[in-house]
Length: 228
Image (cartoon, rainbow, N blue to C red; front, side, top):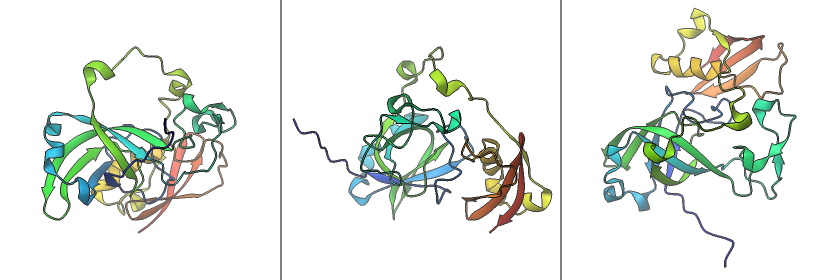
């Protein structure tokens, strides 16, 4: 049996993240994040989406296009464990896998028919960089895929982790109103790698055509600049 298969890109996502830094570590963490799914010309047949409007959430199967490596490692360093403790790759959602595939659950806000790009899917809560290739879309079925009592392993250790965000009014007013809630929620999740704890370091995060500068002291993230 062949061990190599071909996967086609059926769509790409349009999001406000031009680079990896700052993207939420999981889908659904920040519902304020809006994105669009644009199908490739070959897959713009509206019949392929018939019935999808009846679902509130969809699974996206996609590729870690900026994290492809020739070799894989059986263990990785999950960021939320400080970047020093190794865990089995199949016990994590690390992008560095034998096959660099991602899985995200997003809310389906609507399906927009357009003449130029066919039917566009509007979604919320995506954790994908702009331009990420999507390989498949499947509906979320809550009656078989929701297990409230399931054990989340070490991944639940910091599920409630948040920082306080100090954004002076002078910077806050520079943020376009439609991006304010999402940006503050992103910053509250602490975009920094967990192994970087230097309070004197100033970070820059690109989001929605902005370069947001910040530093972290204790449990507070301070916005110190916004470049547009």
